[in-house]
Image (cartoon, rainbow, N blue to C red; front, side, top):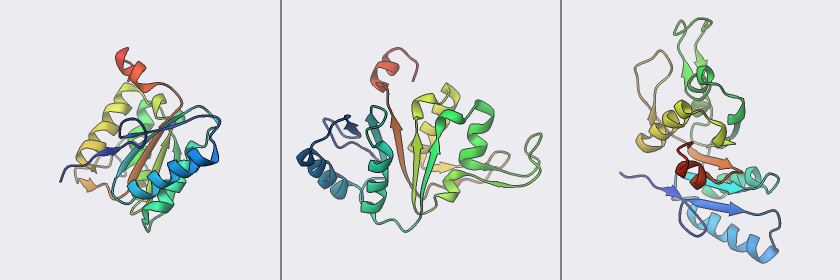
Length: 171
């Protein structure tokens, strides 16, 4: 089956948030969240800092009816060496310092929602890794060969103009 990335404003898959949102606009946004959350797997939230992107992500999680947890991850803290291990986990001995198996955030969010905040801070390698997972809906642990299905909703957020970064070949 083909998967779609959602969008709730202007063109689907984006939700744009501004620093001031009126009650009527919020009710419209929430009605879109209630309509699309149960049927779409991936969302991208774009808005300035402090506009409630994480709160909106949690609203999407709640409205979707998924039984698992809401797991929030700050992508700004990952470097190239950590990203795959943190998101997908790793097998014992897969690299220096991997003394035991590690569960990644995708597995922690099983049957729930994984919120990736500040996705613009991912390196190019991290972006490509995430893109593959969004497209294929499978991942494998570092050091492993078994594919695991993605069983959670994925919500990414950013406070920058990603279309501008794409034009500059930086995202």
